[in-house]
Amino acid sequence: MKIKKDDTVLIIAGKDRNRKGKVLEAFPVKDRVLVEGINIRKKHVRPKKQGEKGQVIEGPGPISVSDVKLICPKCNKATRIGYKVENKKKTRICKKCQAEI
Image 1: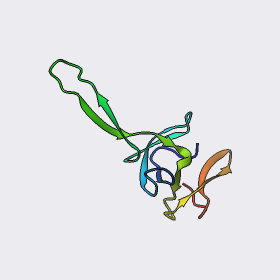
Image 2: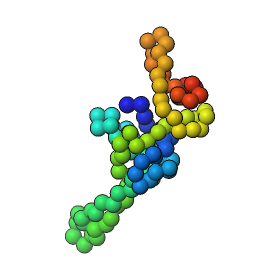
Image 3: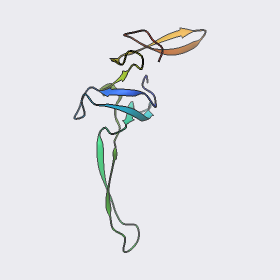
């Protein structure tokens, strides 16, 4: 998966289209990412002890990695990601400006 934790991404599909956010967590097995402030879900939590009140907790839900595009830190544009291999080491590069990410 080309998107990693702490990358800044642009959402390109869904209800949060054209919003930017930072990747909090990546799930490569499921091809999903958790983006800060995007795809907010509500979860109803039952009270654990007697006398305690139940509550509604809001938090981000995972979205598909195909619905996000990486924002290049150098050219500041949404771009695809390529790879450059040197000395058996693979580095990510921006497809627009060829800068290392």
